[in-house]
Length: 104
Image (cartoon, rainbow, N blue to C red; front, side, top):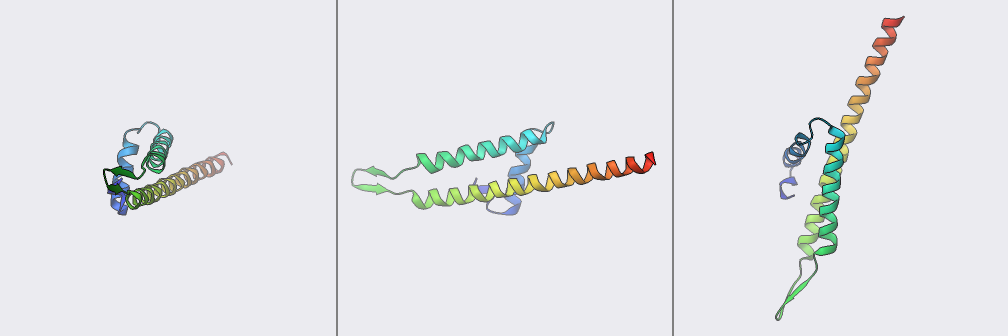
């Protein structure tokens, strides 16, 4: 998730996720969202302060930074999904309009 700090990093990571499922992009989006949600839940609920002898290790800043990065990446995935859906729908509308014109 650390590679998601920049737009280029987000795009690279997201492209890798989608390339794993080239045959079905919807499955790629679904898998990416589910994996990210699972990772965010693990971070949210499983990272707790820990005591080692007389030292208390408080990972709250790291935890919050990871959650922020994960949420940014989730937003990126959803925006990309919206953009792809719009493109696909516009293509479908254009094809339907062309078909209507041909049938006239």
